[in-house]
Image (cartoon, rainbow, N blue to C red; front, top):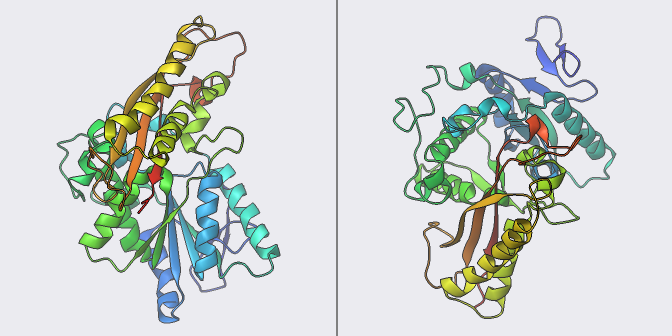
Length: 359
């Protein structure tokens, strides 16, 4: 920690951490955020928030860039929220890469400093709280029947990802409500890759009459194969990484069917299922030292506002194609094979495509 932050402050003033070589403050408590935020409110300076759980990648950076183009000050939160992990999910193995995250923010700050004026503002602060700070009454737990102060958005938070991970969106909505109340941003930035999350957050902001604009940035993908960038991709390793695009390819096939005039659920999803079957058969012909095993959790064709499944796409409104796939552990690793971060545990990947209205 000492290598990536320094403590500064004029005599008699409160001391604060700062990322060396930048003006970016590191705020770790709710009072410190509010002290930083108050004069900006009085000066009518716009503030944006980009919530993250760290392990920053280009998808996060693209959201931060967008926020800096449109706002005077940008706060990036880095907090691995235990409330959005289920009791069977390994919270401890989630990548924690503070030094690398700081390095990315430093590089971005230098890039913006050298820019000729594309940005209204810069990253002004990183909010990096502890769980004790975020849950002052004590963390209530990850069980479905946990008692505590939660925000639940239903029924949209109960389908798809919410069905597979019943406490996930409760955790997301709760921590986002806390972050929004702490930072008091005018705008918040989320990525389309987590499309159901964006629907949940939009609904929460609307239903609780929060004075916040939710901005959705497009999914950033690997330039070589189109895999959506995710902090979880580091778990894959080389072998599974080559097959992990199965979901993206399946969704694209369904999108192409929609573009060719298909409107029925069976027709559109049938195109996706063909791709999945082909990859399963291809891998099934390989031995355990070569193959990759995976399980498709779901492939969905849903209403863009409710995430409820649709039988026929209303071409005036479009729909959301989404899915989740679990990449299983490598059966028989080869000697010296790169299995990925933490030895290559099971990895659950999600992706989606927005089917735009055609009328």
